[in-house]
Length: 177
Image (cartoon, rainbow, N blue to C red; front, side, top):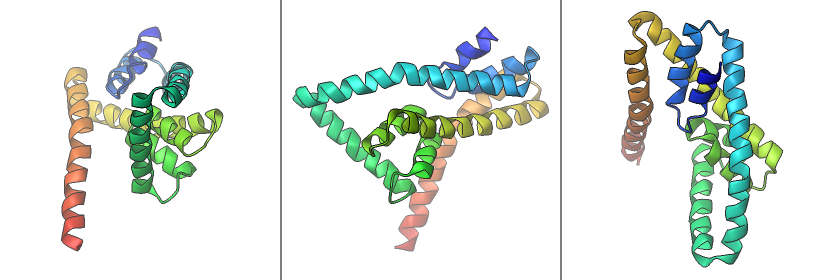
């Protein structure tokens, strides 16, 4: 179980396909695998929250960090506006699903949500992301039967699909004007 957990601690989505396939190869049931991913999110929260708070405190005292904080707050507002007009729970879950849990938590903080609620939204979105990626990985590997190729394809899709969605969305939006 420890190697699977360590893969899930990788801060980008690349640990999910490898961790899911390793868990399946080691006979771990899916609820245990999902539980390990959830625990990795809790560890992330315990590590990231103090860092986030430190930057907030330092941003009040250091002008450069204050500017960076203002830029990030503006970016978080644009993220929230992309999904909805307010930074409510569904919006924050979708930000975490679409970007990452740290961005989801930072957006929740900027919207005034507390630690527990902010991380609950961020982890919920990340668990949805995990579910989509885990199911995709397992289904693809059942056809390909090659874990390395499966991981390569899933990682490639993780990078290409968002770019393609943005491209086609911009073309669709531009065409409607």
